[in-house]
Image (cartoon, rainbow over all chains, first blue to last red; front, side, top):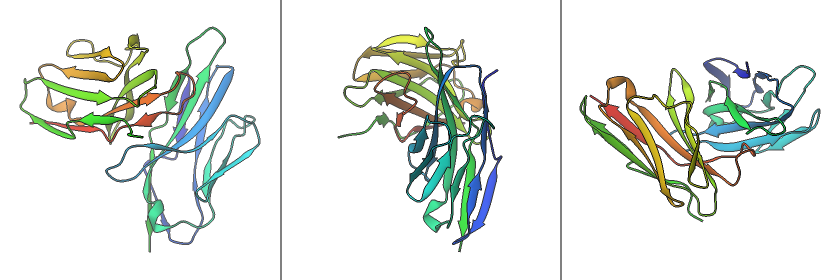
Length: 116
Length: 114
């Protein structure tokens, strides 16, 4: 079936060091778009990045991700983590086929903690 | 522009009582979604409306959960005979169209069932 798999659980990184959150997917749908959502403590999830173009780097707020259909991945990276990046991160796949309703498939979320 | 508004932000009920959660989507958004969020399960899809019509309720526990959208500015999620395992944050989201994947979430209603 269709699924999104993220780095599980908790990722801890020291401020200033690079961070990478993994996201891989499995789908039979033809048209796909990817999203990284971020949820800060006591706030609503919000879109951080989105992409539907293979091998094109997308950037926002210092984070970047590249959709690689060849490896079914959309990993989230940042070269220098900040304390304010501590949050819950969700990878999500929006998939659709011709004539079908599309669907949004979520990973389980990865909690990122950035330590001083 | 106001975002998605959810009320109440916190609700505590006793086991067996009813809980009703409200959502006001962003004006002009045609799709409304309800999700349940827990630490263990992450984001669980419950149900989805498009132009007020129920489209997909495949995530709804059939016996005690129901959702309605009586007008374009208002949706409700009702849980009858609440159980401790219903304790979660219930998130409402809206979007311009079903297949963008870009949802705008409210801050959620935290339900605690004692």
